[in-house]
Structures are given as structure tokens and as C-alpha cells.
Image (cartoon, rainbow, N blue to C red; front, side, top):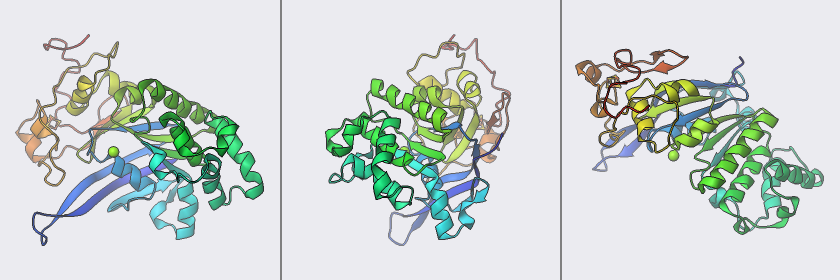
Length: 334
Ligand code: SF4
Ligand code: MG
């Protein structure tokens, strides 16, 4: 099973102003995360807003510089590359995000917008650009005649298709999808998710799919990584995470999701309180102030990711003690 992307010990710290100008504080947005993505695979990063998932995605596409760690793409360390090598490698990792509208120049036609990245990277010339645009529009399910229109003439779902076509124009192997359907109506969400899946099948694409929407994640993922306050707390195959969540935070996230999950037998764990500030993260296990299973050890010792069955890794001191399904607990769902 070849690896396309390998992320090792990736961290991002931001220096932020404190209450007074001479105070500098460190915000640990992403804290020593590691994962890999295989060709043709979708790994989802899920968690509440502010958990660091978008920052992780931005580091992969080169928009944010890591504070520590390595990003290996096709076996090459991106940080060890020259600028021109980086440019060629970076082209292979593209980003699509919530609403591409803000990044689409309103005075350019859709055809120009889609041709632009291909021309910039020398993947098309003026003569071949029109054919390439027609081909890309077809790939994302838009008619050729749309090439002459302007972004404001399109709906949110169509604009996301245009954003996807622009990403595909430079022939990526990995697309970081940061909440790509969160701003869309549910019926349109399904269309875009289906499009992403069919493009994956046709082109062998890999996705890092960043989302807080668990029903979409359940639909599109092969594997899922759950993030909390900058850390990956559980990562594994989709079925392991959704049907038999191990980490108390994963259980709580799933219990809070308003989606019926037939067949999923999981304890309902209520999420108490808000996520603490990453400026002042709790000691030990960062989840301990909100965890119903926390014991003294959890306040002192940071739990490492360790194998937790069904191909998953879980970072919890007590995952084995917490009954897999609290069948007798009040509120347990069957
Ligand atoms: Fe809860 Fe302790 Fe596990 Fe953290 S390590 S999730 S506080 S039981
Ligand atoms: Mg975000």
C-alpha cells in the first residue's frame, strides 16, 4: 500500500499579542500530528472549530509554514526542496475551500479563470487552453457554454464546481478540501460530494477532507482523524471510528451529531463546556476538563496515540476500561 503523503510530527505555533503589547503568548494550533494518505484515499480531519484542522490543511498546501515536523509528498521532503522544485511539487497538492467566490476575480470569465492556473504552470498554451477548459468543465459537470460567463452568474454549488475545475487544471494528486460543502444546501452538498467521489475514481485523486459535518465525512471518507485542541486523539478506518468510537471525545462528537446512525451502538457522552483556549491548554490530556472519565492521571500525563483495535490509534489512558458499548448506560442508543 503505497503512501502518497506522509506527515510526521507536524506542529504550528503562532505568536500572538497578550493583554499588554510587551507580552507575547504562544498559541499551539497544531501539536505534533502524524498521518499518511494513500493514492486514491480520502482521510477526513474532523473536530470542532478551532481544533487546528484548517491550519493543518494550510500547512500541506504551503500557505502556512510549519513550526516543526516534516511533510513528505511522493517520498520527497517538501521542506528540503528548492523554490522551483517546491513549485512543481506544490502544484500536485491543491486546496478547495468553503466558497471560492471571494477568490474568483469577478472580471474574468469562467473560461479564463479555469485556464489561468494551467497557463501559469505551463500545462496548456493559448491554443490548447480552450479545449482544456471544455474538458475541465465537462469533468465537473458544467456545460461548455458556461466558459464565457462570469462568477456572479452562478449558484454556490456551481461556483464550487468552478473551484474544483481550477484545482484540477494543474493536475493535482492530492486535494485538501476545507469545508467544501459547509456553505451549501443539503441537496447541493450531496451533489458536490458525489462529484468529488467520481473524480477520485476517474483520476485516482487523494483527498484530505476537513469538515465538522459528520454525515458528509461518513459518506466520503476511507479513514478519519479526530482532532481536539491541536492534537489527533483518534485515527482509523471509517467503520472503526463511526461504529465503535474509542476515544471519549469521538464518542461525544458522534453523540452530539443530529444524524441517525443505524447499526451504530455507541455510548452517548455529553460534551460539557466549551473547548478551552489553545493559548492556555489544559495539562496532561487536553480533553480532561470535559471528559466524564477523567482521573487524576489524566491531569498529569499526556496520553500517546497507541493501537486501539480495528486498525485505529487512540490517545486515551482509559480506552480499555471504558466499556466498548455502554449497553446498560441510560441513554445508550441501539
Ligand atoms: Fe478522558 Fe483521561 Fe482518556 Fe483524556 S486520557 S480522554 S481525560 S479518560
Ligand atoms: Mg476551519
